[in-house]
Image 1 (cartoon, one colour):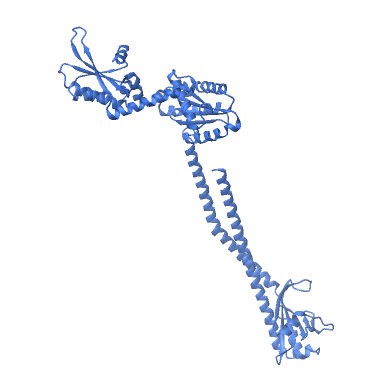
Image 2 (image 1 turned 90 degrees about the vertical axis):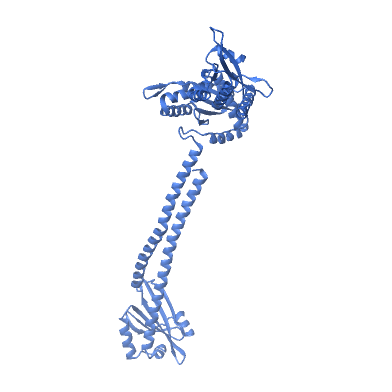
Length: 524
């Protein structure tokens, strides 16, 4: 996972956590506000009911509000209600809002010094009850209570205000416990309903990110060795070349090929070949610096990019270290694998300033190392481009000749030595060049083998030789030359079947089998 995607994922997790906290906090606050509202309403209703009950059962409010003693009936009522329910205090105010009588836990008495109450005065002035809840501030007051100021109207005019104070502490505690349980249950339900999908999303996102990382890794690395692959190598090389002017130093591309890898693979099997490739990768990493780049392009081809080097001497020293490290025998089961490598080196910016050009230059140098006998290092030279162009032209000519049957056969007579009698002819293939000259087999046959067109050429030679030989007398034979690559395939048996089907006898030989045959092919 990239740095930016990791940051995005962390932000997503943080956002989920914030959302969950907000949901839980919002749920908690919603339940609390609802509970407080219900408690407040309950307290107000209770206080108003007690005040209304008192107002409807006392008939001498006007006299009491005027400072007179309450009647015996009213006094008896006050005494009875003082001991009932949660009402801990009654106060009767006159129309101006001054207290005249107080009934509390200590008894019922007229006040000697009136106290003004704005709430009582407002209730008398508006003719509407004034109800509120409060928290106790002194030891003689409940922790939480409600107060209701109820105006007493006579003839449509307020004559007094009755205030009832109701203890709501126990009710509030009961409400709060219910609130806590409800809030906890609702928060738990909210957390589960949101948390379970969030956890599932988190796990799914992590799995997707791991899968994405694996896909990106496989897209950028060789599966067998874990080294950088071709596409990622070019990307890294582009970045390295972009910073080359700023660094003010050089860069070397080493194209490394294991000599005769196919023979090792055929001898030890694919397990042995894979083990060798992985060991080669480990040794290349061991001799490289952290700043260097090591890649596998496929098969037995590796590339090492040396960064920040002073010149050709550094590249040559690194190539020597690579060759020494890779030539050390590798234990495998009951065997020891001994290999040599051919190395082609291209320097930047001298031999190229873009990845394709540098890799091509290093590849050309590698071809020169192979042509020079393998197990050596060669640096790119400008004339290698000319050799490559000549090779590409020859490939185009061979492909065109295969597609359009442009080959020609020359027939060289074969005589019996003892009698001097003509016994047949040998078919010799030639390839006409665009300028009209003939390209000899020793020049184009190796190219045809490398581009895997030799079987098609062999089939054409066989068919053409049979076609011509069918017009000869029956006692004459035709000989068709085959390349070593055709002997390794099933072409030999196909040739024999074709010749027999054509009614001719066959002498099948290797055109490079003897020195005499090579000379004959050259001379035509």
